Image (tube, rainbow, N blue to C red; front, top):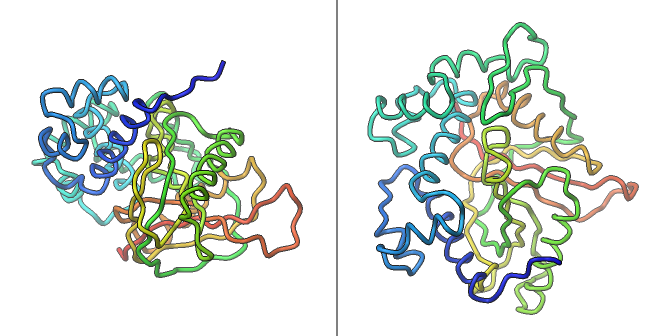
Length: 306
């Protein structure tokens, strides 16, 4: 029997999503229980216990994990930014506290991690050892697929309505179909859809750096109408700015290959670094005469010059 969320639990999920959205956009700041509890409309006394019960992870463990996973990503994707600069930009008070936390999580210091992961963007280099992270391996012989077009675009700031999933999603086409169906029904019944609405999936985490049960995705639709958050459905702002955009024709089992190209092939060789905005897939109208097995997908990587 499928597990059905009751109205109260949906409301709790909505509050937790709001808190996580805020944390993700403000990781460089000092984040307090009082501040985050206010966003969730819970008392500070109860909020930490509620958060752990709802997510299976303490509030501060979540914040620390997010900061460290983002730091690990920046260490290999922006070699010109110093370790100290990365640490301070993600809310660590000093490099010493960051160094201790990083080594505790990954079993290797940040400098060695950065140097050994040079091979991650070099498929021809087979001499480097794999580095084990969260029981996963970064593969120096990574495979990828080429885009059919590639551009640098200036993206406008966009409001989206979303439904979020926490947990494993790779290769689960039924999960995506279910999330899109639920969101479509919701935006249709509330008249949020407009002729210019766009559909996308936001990826909040960093693939192999995050355990599968902790991965978060948001299936989204853009809208210019005023949105009222409603239980399992929320709204957020995708900040505008420069983005690298790869356009792909993909079968259902090729999405990871496209992401591999953008993050492991193009990005390290591009002269750009990723910034703090989220990555996402956008699904343009299908204007090509293609088979039903392939879908047109654009991957957006927010960037800043090195």
